[in-house]
Length: 158
Figure 1 (cartoon, rainbow, N blue to C red):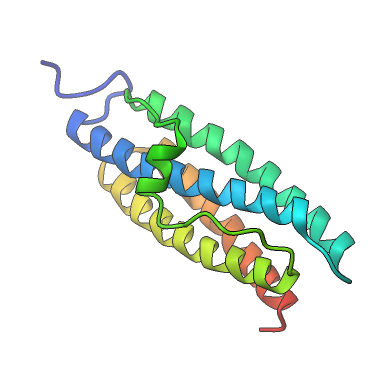
Figure 2: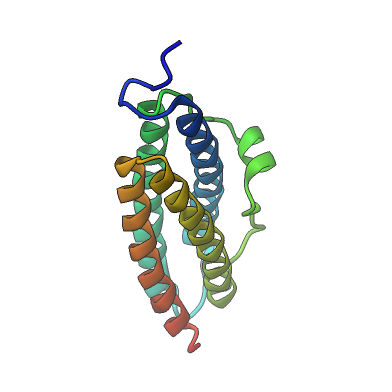
């Protein structure tokens, strides 16, 4: 058996990366659906502002979900695709209906923290595996989401 996959990465390291990427995929998928719910159900004086921000966020998450799944495939493995697995794997839990903007933003910040921590772990794993493709994705995601964390925190006056 060849010790490397089709893109020249160690098979064992690629498998471990794929498992962690599937964990990220589960968290992103639950986060995405939570954001859709916030977008649909938001009420109050900040409705117009938050409704648009939540739409921007779920559109971005939609793209990231696809990129993560395609990265798993590139590594030679299979992305999970059902919510039963996502709910079992994800540290982010499904939210109840949230119409309060402050509560929604607090949930978003908690979800970003979970995802950023997971992505930093993936960054270390991808670096160890010489996997520049996954490394670049994680680095870009972390940079973007750290800025969003600052912005959403500022919205809450924190």
